[in-house]
Each structure stands twice: as C-alpha cells, then as structure tokens.
Amino acid sequence: PSRTAEVKLDDEAGRQHWFRISCRTLADEGGANGSRKPANSNIVGNQGAVAVLTDITHEKAIQKRNAEFVSSVSHEMKTPLASVRAYVELLADGDAEDEATREEFLGVIHSQTERLQRLIDNLLNLSRIEAGVVNVNKAPRALNELLEEAVNLLQPAAAHKRITLSTDLSPLYLGVLADRDTMSQAAINLISNALKYTPEGGRVAVRSRSADDSVVFEVQDTGVGLSPEDKLKVFEKFYRVKKDQQMASGTGLGLPLVKHIIEDVHGGRIEIDSEVGAGSTFRV
Image (cartoon, rainbow, N blue to C red; front, top):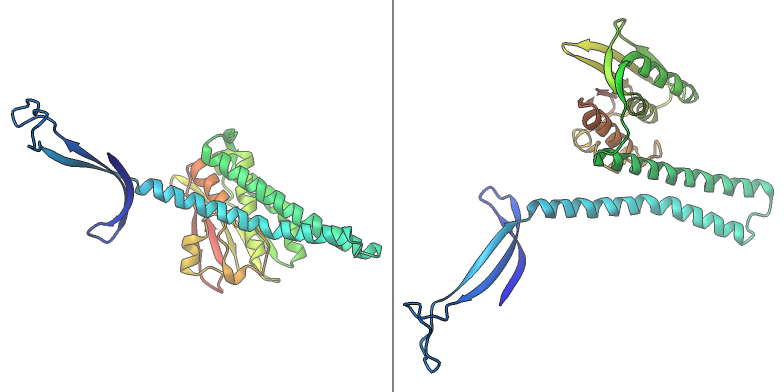
C-alpha cells in the first residue's frame, strides 16, 4: 500500500517549505539468501518503507497567487455589477418617473459598464504581456515625441482639475528602441496617475534626459505621496493605497501594466521616489 500527503516544514532559518510526501511499504518475500520461504514458514522476511519528499513550495506559492488574483478580480467586478443591477431594477420597477431621473440612472449604468470595460481591457493587456503574446513592433523612436503626445493628450484633464502640467524635455535627441503603442500607454498611465493623486492647484512635470548609456524620463507630482510600505506594493495587481482611494476611481492595474511594459517588454527599469504629503517621482 502507498499513501500521499502534503506537509509544511520550517527550515533552520524559519522559512516555510511545502513537501509532497509519498510513502510505500516494502516487503521482501524471499529469505535472507534470496530463496522463497516455504508456504508453512512463520519467518518474516525483510520489511521496510520508503518515503519520497518532493519540494512543492513554488507550486504552493503559484496556487496562492492565483487564488488571490481570482479573489481580487471577483471583488473588483462585484461593485460595478451591483450598481448596474440595482439601477436596472429601479428602471424596471418604474422608480424613474421623470426624464431627468432616468438620465441620472442611465448615466450611472454607463459609467459602471465603462469601469468594467477598463478592468477587462487592463486584465487582457496584462495577461498578453505576461504570456509574451502581445504584438510588439520595436523601432528607433524619439522619446520626446512620445512624451509630448502623452502630455498633449492629458492637458484637458489637467486643466479641468486646475493642475499645471508642464514638460522639461532634453534638447538632445533621445533615441529609444521602443514599441510606440505600449510605450505611449506607459507614459499616459504614469501621467494620468499623477493627475489623479495630485490635489487641485498642484503641479505635474514630465522630464527627460540622457544618463550615461541610458535615457531617462520622469513624471513628478506634488500629490499625496506614498509611504515606504505603499512603495513596495504599488506595482502589485489590484493594490490601491487605502488612504487615497476616495481621491480617484481605479482598478489597481495601471501601475502593474506600466511595470510590465517598461521592464518585460522593453528591458528597462522603473523606480519610485516618494514621501507622504510631499509628492512622488516615477523614474523610467
């Protein structure tokens, strides 16, 4: 007979490891000299058991991350779906008696379906990049042009919030081997994130420069800033700074997507300098 079980053991440093243990009994039907025992013999041959331990710590970590990911996705989808369902039921029950109320209800439904669409789009983009199947067309490009386009696109959003969005771009030609679409998306996400978490009347600056054998661009804001703990977790999927969640809606997927685009697609590096109440600088 054989048995299989999973156990958790601690090493000398106190780190936990998971093992799958397979045990099987062994029985030698032969005698000591290898000859078969007589049928009426009461002599017991050599007996024992063998146990095989397989380290499954990595598998357990993946299972845990997958479970957390599914839980997070479900949680993120619950709120907009609940809102859509509630307002559809109100409309179906005839609670919207006038045109203005109906417009209000439909507006909420529209905004929540857009939120769901953004969530799904970001999830698909992340999964494609992680799976290495995203269509990437790298070519020599001018970094400043990509940054200027992103800034121009977001100027109306900055003006609406009375935030000064400025550029300080290098006068040199900063050539990068980049995919236009994904790199533009990374720049837009960083600038948009800075605008979201900068109070009215604040400033957001986009800078570029040459540094040794690299080119660098930064998005600096005068926003709410990040604690040391937040800086460690801000690139995790669905992580949102609790104290700032009321400032802006979001899925917690924007910065993880930026990290994948910069580091996995383009082989670059992204860093954060930030202090609570003193703003943040995202450096690529």
